[in-house]
Length: 138
Image (cartoon, rainbow, N blue to C red; front, side, top):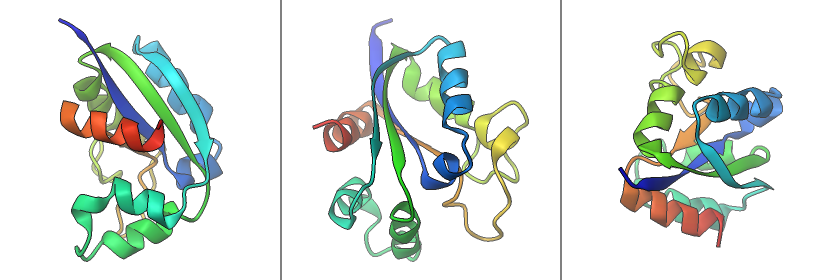
């Protein structure tokens, strides 16, 4: 199977809680390769480009505000089935129901009805990965 690439973001809550190293260690332990890594303080324009498909949805503005709240670590990963594999490693979007052994299951917090503060983002398809990598690693 050919190697593919994906984008992973350690969101502001993960960076603020000092979990970047633990998250990267899990990624490397899984056997994926970190191709590039950047600490970024994204602006609204950058985030609007990344989350364009969600514009107009009720969670859009709170998500943008949260992502503006601190630095983000952008990680470009490669590996066989890395998109699917990282999303499995990350766990379900809602940390409360995410399985133990996943990033969100082990480190996530219950923030009530908001699931934006769930530590990480991972691309959901090869098309999204290509688009997102282009946004964060231009």
